[in-house]
Amino acid sequence: MIAWDTFSEESPGVSKKIELDGKDVYSIIEDFKDWGIYLAERRIDE
Image 1 (tube, helix red, strand yellow):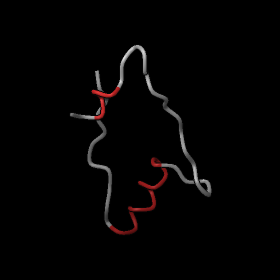
Image 2 (spheres, one colour):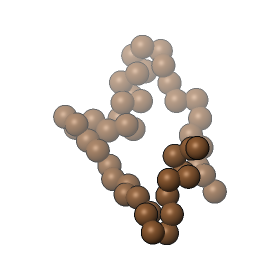
Image 3 (spheres, one colour):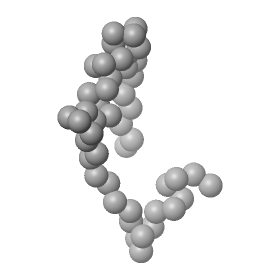
């Protein structure tokens, strides 16, 4: 089973942005640059 198997028309789930101390998952990428870690690729599901 994968995460997407738990969604259905009756139980569509919820998506929301979470931010803590002004940081979200996208801003953390910038912080990692100091460590030599970078975003190599971003994929969009079609």
